[in-house]
Amino acid sequence: MSASILLLPNRQMRVVNLPATACTLPLTLDLLNAFSAERHQLAPDVGMWIDPDRQCLGMGEGNIPATKLSVRLGGLWIPWYGPVLVCGIDEQGRSRDLTADQLRTLAPHLLRLS
Image 1: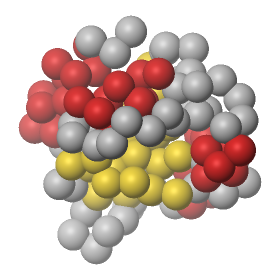
Image 2: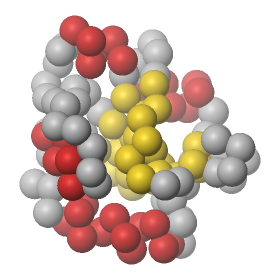
Image 3: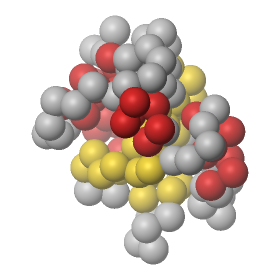
Image 4: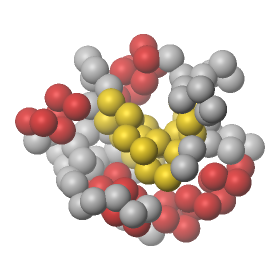
């Protein structure tokens, strides 16, 4: 099983499946409802895509689940805004679905995000 997780500001999560060939920027922009996207490293081979425009301007509703997940995985406490896509990163730096092992590792963190 593999999947990516879309963390929404309203404390909801959606499971999404990225194309097997690696995530394309248009799909990421569509999922984030954004005009641009930026990836931040959460853990080895795990990243999260954010909308940098919302982040810089503090626009929209704060994404508490994404902020908590980032902190729990060792990141700085930075409030994230808008939808956030959590996904795997392959050897070439392309986005892909999280592996079953990555999902098992993230599951305890994801279950305590609300």
